[in-house]
Length: 326
Ligand SMILES: Nc1ncnc2c1ncn2[C@@H]1O[C@H](COP(=O)(O)OP(=O)(O)OP(=O)(O)O)[C@@H](O)[C@H]1O
Ligand SMILES: [Mg+2]
Image 1 (spheres, protein in one colour):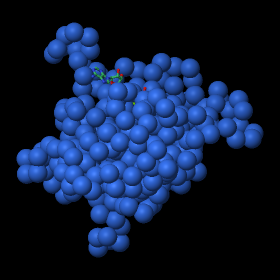
Image 2 (spheres, helix red, strand yellow):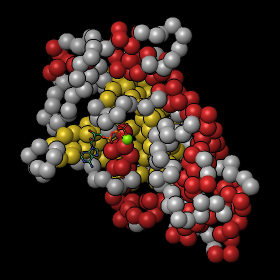
Image 3 (tube, protein in one colour):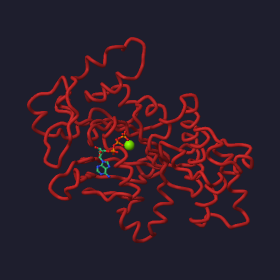
Image 4 (cartoon, protein in one colour):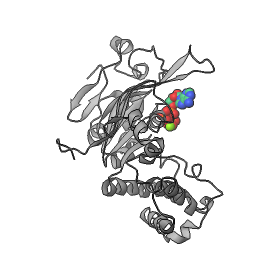
């Protein structure tokens, strides 16, 4: 805890921008996948990043793992610019502390190796265990993620497990190296509905009892509300609304967040979605694009919305949005 009684900030992102070349041309034609995104991730807290396909969620996560460099902006890890942290401690140490889990647990596991191999390997690479204690540690980790009997599970190959069990293996592998942060990119979206809650509850346990911070990427605002203390809604590379999950999901103020929430099945809102937005185009954002990205679909859009990107407006305690009509 720090002086203002909030958990310490582990990762902070300020004014992050990422451009990609469009097609083959390297310089002339760029698209802006992430624009002016800022957030903080605190110890033991989850931040849900919610948005539809192409909104820049995975790009943000890949920048945080340093797979991609940012075009502009600052990333701070444990109070230090991330490049300084890596210079001082090495990229292997950064990779240990910032783990990622993916949508497709099958794709992220090697079919020719046993589960034991998958968990033992990072322990060895990151020198987290001596050779004689590795077996015990692997079994402990498998038990911790709910895969018991651990010894039997360890001897299996990925194809012998269910999707939910494979995702538990991916989580065990991530926590094996005692990370500070897990970037979870749609970790439950490919799983059977019946096992999704179990994975979310496992992640909740890791967050609440082991102090791991999560960035939880999802299309599904209902699970964001269930799992994460904070929620940020993204649209076409922009964070359009963010704050405490309760505020964002119970009192959404941005027309796009309202649209997303209207898609959550609840008695009485059938058909409401059509009333909240036009069928307009989802724009291709470029470095010189102006205005609010949601303007072409927004029922409230006025001239101002086509002319300038709204600055963040504070709506309440821990609740912000970018909209000219707030
Ligand atoms: N390596 C790349 N090169 C060029 N364009 C890219 C690259 N990676 C992502 N993009 C583009 O950036 C935009 C954002 O993509 P991103 O994968 O971050 O979206 P997302 O929110 O994760 O979507 P989804 O929900 O489908 O996973 C998309 O328009 C995508 O085509
Ligand atoms: Mg993605």
